[in-house]
Each structure stands twice: as structure tokens, then as C-alpha cells.
Image (tube, rainbow over all chains, first blue to last red; front, top):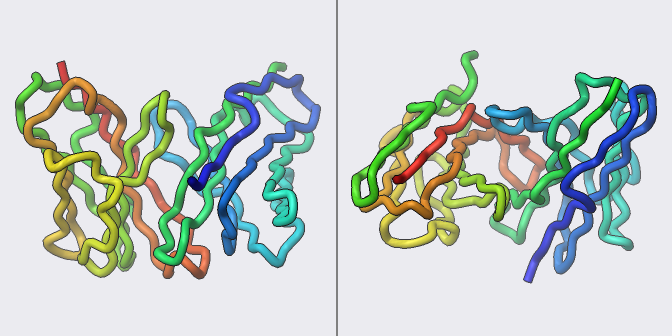
Length: 112
Length: 116
């Protein structure tokens, strides 16, 4: 069956450090992958999309990589700030119907 | 734009009662999705519509769940009868592009459902 796994439920880092979150998938050949941020009591908010023919995508302090051989995406936040504390979700399109399937998320806590 | 609007924000009901969740997508978006989120299972896709037509309802857990989209600006998700295991946060999301082109989802704030 198709699975998406995010490496850990929680990640605690110190302010100013780089946070790295991992998303692994099996039995997929996704055309693209998306990352979302979710704050408590709110719906997920889109951050970045990376296509299968792109190795890396950047947006301000965010960087996403996509390795279709390893079936893995890495999400980096450089110079992290307490305001970056949230749950981050990766999502893949499943099959030809285009259903967006989400991982369970990684809760990031950035300590001052 | 006000974004995706869901109502109610919170719903507490007793087992066996009917529950109706409502969603107004972003104007002009042609895809609408209903998701359910729990700690155990994360975000699960229940059903999605394209141009008001249900495309895939394979995620709907049982016949107790039904969804409609009578027009481009309104959708409902109904649970009848409700059970305690239905307790979760239900999200509605809308999208403009075909999924295969990388359309991003815009989520509402969700409905926190508690079935006692």
C-alpha cells in the first residue's frame, strides 16, 4: 500500500539553528510534493511545491529537496525562530485521480 | 477574499444524532475536498468534488457519511447517525487547478466535532 512517513512526531531545536524535517514515501511515483504548515486550531497553510524534475526549491528561509531515487523530501528552515514553531505536513498526489495524501506531520518547537 | 469558510467551528452532539457540517469554498475554485484529522490517523481525505460533481468518495468511512455540493459556493458533509468514533476535526479545502498540475489547497479553519 502507499505510505507517507514523516521522520518524527516532534523536533525540538534552538533558535538560530537549521531545522530539517524528513518525508519518506513508498509505492508512489508522485509528480510533485507539497509542504504545509499547521498552527493549533487552524487549517494547514501551503508553503512550497516541488516537482519531480526539480531537485531543490527555495523560498526565503525555507528550502525543500526532492530525491525520487531515495523517495524522500527534506524540508529545511534556516535561522529558525520561535515563530516557526508549528506542525509541518508533507503531501503527495496519489495516482491519476490527483488525491492529495498527507503525512501525519512533524511538530517543530523552536526554543529561544 | 475571505478564504474557505466552515461552520460551525465547534459541534458537540450526542451519539445517534445527525450532524451537518458546512463549507463555502473560495470563489472561482473548481475543486472541493473534505478531510478528517485525528491524532491517530492524521489528515484523511474523505471525498472530493470537481465542478460540483463527486469524483472520489472512497475515503468516506461508511454509509453514515454523505456529502453534497448543490452549487459552486456550498457543500455539506452529513453524518447520520453520529458515533463517538466520529469525533475529529473536519476540514474543507478548495483548489483552483487540476491536481496533476500541482494545485495547492486552501483550507478552512475546520469544525471540531465531539460526539458524546
